[in-house]
Amino acid sequence: MPEELIKRLRTMPDAKKIALAIYGESVAAYRYSILAEKSTSAEHRRVFEDMKAEELGHQTALERLAASSFPDGNFVLSAADKELIIAGTRMLDVTTPAAFRRAMQFLHDTELRTGRFYDALHELMPAGELGVFLKEMAAECYEHGASLLRIDPPACTSASTATGE
Image (cartoon, rainbow, N blue to C red):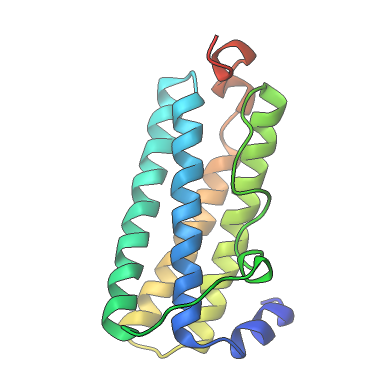
């Protein structure tokens, strides 16, 4: 577990940690929707759509948790906060095969970063049902990261379909 991550999270209120997790899930869902939309392979579209659906489910579960556990929680997330879980830019450029590969790398790096974030939350936050949930979230992030490595980006898109021509 990266010590800097643990150190930063120790100083953060639990409600803000959950707000950050919600943000991460929303960005992941958005990114997977872009990849699904631009992918030329039906199999890859399905994989990305499935990942998007999982991320939206996580976001909803976290929003419920925040509403029930932290009803007064309201935070502005700084760029430094967001960098704890998001790699690369929020908006993805997938207009060329090379750009698609970069987007896939951002997603892979983000999944690993988010997995470490959930592992750290599991370590720092109360045990019980929340702890089990956080551990499951970390495992799913690592699983998504591994899935992304199995996808051949050049097979996902071509320059003509990515630009809408």
